[in-house]
Each structure stands twice: as C-alpha cells, then as structure tokens.
Image (cartoon, rainbow, N blue to C red):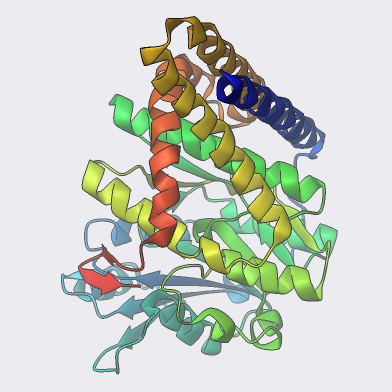
Amino acid sequence: MVLFDAFFIISISLLFVYAFVFLWFAYGWTKLRSSTISSSLNTSVSVVVAVRDEEKNIEKLLDCLLKQDYPTNLLEIIIVDDSSTDRTIETIKNFQEKNRATNIVLVLLENISPNPSPKKRAIAEGIKRSKGKLIITTDGDCEMGNKWISSVASCYEKTSSKMIVSPVLLSSTKRFFEQAQSLEFISLIGSSGASLYYKKPLMCNGANIAYERNLFFETGGFDNNINSASGDDIFMMLSIQKMYSGQIVFNKSEQAIVTTAACNNLSTFIAQRKRWASKSLQYKNGYIYLISALVYAINISITISVAISIFYNRFAPTFLFLFFSKSLIDFIFLITVSTFFNKKKLLIFLLPMQLIYTLYISVAGLFALSNSYYWKGRPLK
C-alpha cells in the first residue's frame, strides 16, 4: 500500500508538471506571430532534396517546385539521387525535358563507398554544389503551395535569423491509423513552434527547414554526427543554436506548410519511429532530454496505473483521473495548434488515440536502444 501511495504522489506530481509545460506551450504557440510575405524579395535560394526510390512521388514535388512564384533568377533546385533502385532518375530527367526546367540540377551519387548516413551525405553533396545564400531542404515525397519559398525567404529577410523552421503536416486518408499519426504530428510541430517562441529549440523536421549556406560549413556540417544515419535536421539545428543562440525562428505561416503522407502500414511506422528514436541519445541538450523524459514518464505512469487497476479495482479512479486530466491538457494544447492547420476535426480521435498513444510511447522508448533498422531497402544504424 505504501508503494501505491508513493506511485500516486509521483504520478500527480508528474501530471502537474506536464500541465504546466503544455499550457506553457499552448501560450507560446498563440503568441507566435503569423508570418506574411514581403512584396520584394532578393535572397538567392537553393532548394536541396535528397531522394531515394521516389519514383511514385518525385513528379508531384517537382511540379510544386516548378510552380513556385519565387523569382527564377534567384532560385535553383538541386535533386540529389542517393542510389535509387527504381525509375526515380528517369522520371526526373523526363520532367526536366518535358518542362524545360533548366534550374533543376540532378546530382547522382553512384558507385561510391558505403556511408553510415547516406541521406546526410546526399544533402551535403547538394549543398556543396549549391550557389544560393539560403538553403531550404525538403523530402522527395512532399508537396507544398506555390508561395512556399517566398514565405520562407520572407521570414528569413524580416528576422535575419540563421535558421528557419517551418510547419509540416501529414496528409491522411479516413483511416484511423493515419488520422492518429496526423494528430500526433500536429502536436510535435506545435511543441517545436512554441519552444522556438521561447528561444529553446526542441525539434524540427528536415522536410521543411532553411539555414544560411555558409553556416553548413561554419558548423562543420554533419561531421560531428555522421555515424548517426538520421538527424540531418535536428543536429544541424543544435549546432546552429550552439553558435548563434536565439537566432532560430519558427515560420508560422499557412503558405509555408509542407505536406507529406502518413505511414500507411505498421511496419513502415515502426521503422520510421526507430529512425527518429535512434538519434535521441546523441542530442546532448538538457532541455530536449527533460521534455522527452516528462512525456515518457507521464505516459508510463498511466500505463502502470492501468495495470494496477486490473488487479486492484479501487485504484481505477486514479487511472481515470490521470487519463482524463492528461487528455484535457492535450486538448487545450492541440486545439490551439490544430486551428492553425485547419484540422480541428481530428480532435474527435483524441480519446481513443490517448489509450493507444500511452502504450505506444511506453514501448517507443525502447526504440532508442535499437542500433539498427531498415529504411528504403537499406540496413542503417
């Protein structure tokens, strides 16, 4: 009984800290100013995209990039193919020829020695060959509106920031599995934006980030984390934060949103989460560790309370209190962020998702201990 009392006190304490942090996030998100696009832009931009086996998606991305309203004399698009095994290269070449897209540069990485981080190698090669002052990265399976580059460049010129983090949204069908991922992703983007309001970088997504080209070389690029297969986004963010504290901003603009598809099956989802979690032990950032530990701990406490309630019915009220209190906190935070994305209807999945998410987070913590996974047909570490 003493253990139960101690667990109850710890759980309630965690809940209060969780409430403080996520209401703090909610406030930070609402205080972020919406970005607008300047009427005149003069920053040279290089969009760098590392692709592998994106035959089914690359033409949509290229079409989106070709339709950008940004001045063509200030824009170059560099697609780096990382040893694709499908018709990605042929699809890009056909698109170039069909649309006379002279500002699209295709870089091929073939017959090269193995690398522990092939995507980073591809991005680095693209940046080395770029000429723009501002590097913008995205992924081969993404889509965006025609003012995307203008929005990012405008934010850069107005703020004089070293790095711009912009929103990413998961597109989804009506399947619960994909809708739940979309809601979770909105939470991640909201946390990222809110943290940047407080000048405390938490996370970012390589599908929509921008930074000054010279910073890539000034920070050493990916040299310090080349043994981690993923992390081309967050490690760069942390390197820039270390050298230029407070000069990373979030571009809160609907026109800056990049959309990518949710995972459509469980195996792909698990591989993706392993890829995300595998780099977490290398962050060396106290703020990120504290927030991650808090989220993990509150979900573990709810999971444990469920297990206890199965054997001791009188503990059920504790579980219900923890579960619904956390759900209310998440609802308050998510309604502020989902309004921006015009995705408030996803909140109907909040309660059922909470049950699954609690167990998923409890298990996902083990992903960080996994030192290998498969991604796009390759074993990575």
